Length: 120
Image 1 (cartoon, one colour):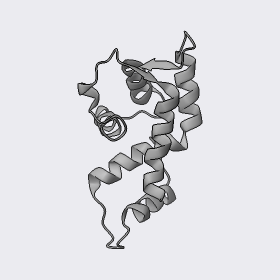
Image 2: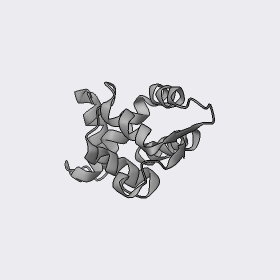
Image 3: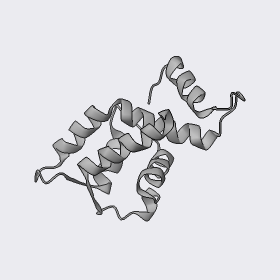
Image 4: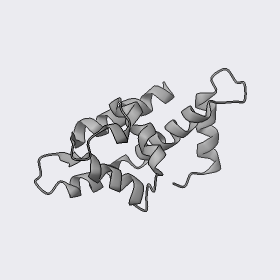
């Protein structure tokens, strides 16, 4: 995941609402990954939709895991997925069955809602 210095500064500014010059590291990581997904949400949605061979709007946790860890665009470490899943789905990736099916549209909507929590 590549981010610019200005993107990092903007994220830190959003998380440091008191202006203390410090942010919680776990929050920083969580929102770094969520922001990267949001910034690339159209590309992510297109990748997920392309993997939906039955055109039912569904993707497995294993497929999502693979996209976020192994695609050139995201290349997230496994710990990042746990952070994202904990925030978006209420559980760590290890706690969610790999064959569990996720609806793409609500997942993308959840991503948007999580991102809006940061900028509101």
